Image 1 (cartoon, rainbow, N blue to C red):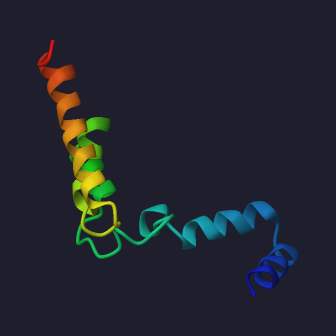
Image 2 (image 1 turned 90 degrees about the vertical axis):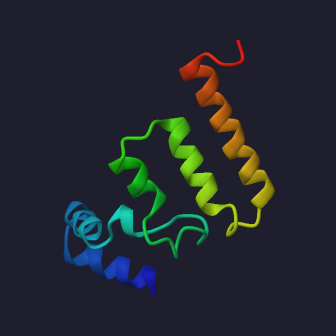
Length: 97
């Protein structure tokens, strides 16, 4: 079905116009690639991270704490939260030196 839609679309419009139209139809912020562990969140972690201007380490704390009950790697995700929090303490506050 998708192949036919793609084929029909490409015969009726240029590749550029097709991809431009598809990009407008499907926003990156409305889809999730690889699983559904953020699907039911009222606020997507990526939106929270971006709007609050969190850095890489802080963003990972948000990401892993948000998904730890849903993805099936709960303990491992909590360990990652702790690790990123320790990195923040070490790199931003000089703790552990």
